[in-house]
Amino acid sequence: MLYLIGLGLSEKDLSLKAFELLNNIKNIYVDTYTNYFDFDLLWLEKALNKKVIPLSREDIEKIPTFLEIAKSEDVALLVSGDPLVATTHTDILLRAMKNGVQTKIFHASSIYSAIAETGLHIYRFGKTASIPYPEENYFPRSFYDVVIENKERNLHTMLLLDVKREKNLFMNPKEAIDILIKIDEDRKIKEIIIISRISHDTQRILYGDIYELAKFDNEFYGLPPHTLVVPADLHFAEEEYLLSLAEIYKNSKNK
Ligand SMILES: C[S@@+](CC[C@H](N)C(=O)[O-])C[C@H]1O[C@@H](n2cnc3c(N)ncnc32)[C@H](O)[C@@H]1O
Image (cartoon, rainbow, N blue to C red; front, side, top):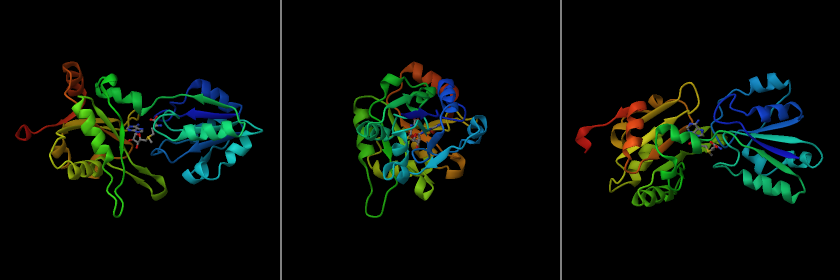
């Protein structure tokens, strides 16, 4: 059996049900490449008194040893957030099923629901997009089209930031804002919200004019993970909540 288990957004967000199951499983792996992984799994290794083996993208996509083991033994694959949200793990489940391995999913807290901490109503979000790192001769912009389509429908856009664990690159809001400003020649994006390290002690929510927020450097925004939101017109209840909890960076001259 392959158990796909969500770790949630921070240390100890793992469900009690999952923890109890892990006590009885010998083969425990953790996907370290789909998110910035700063929470210490030592507590889990100590609590379970067994090793948790980290897996890279290559281990998971190209050499699925854990799937071979899962044919005859129980295997747990731990994933940050919810295992089926904004990741490629449905592919693993399909491969398991094709190999005759039974699967079970343990859900957990996710950026997709935690984003509501901004006060924005979850049902007013349109399609989500990711901002990738530009590459030599390739400057992707499809995420910008998503922002504009959502804006036209008066929907918020959640923008996930690129994670390239192999190169130790985790996109900072400053880099994301610079990319957005470069693409947004007609200046259609006026305001953004930045949500950093949700569910961590250092959680932070910033709201303001994109050009004001562009003035800060990487250090100001701190460690990943971060998510950006390009808000639609705010409902008064959304605005009241957001203004009451966010750090505000507005400049009346930008109006
Ligand atoms: C590929 S997604 C993985 C999402 C994860 N499976 C989940 O359910 O939350 C990774 C991206 O989600 C966002 N993210 C994940 N955890 C976050 C957190 N605690 N605070 C802010 N953004 C987060 C970041 O944009 C990060 O680059």
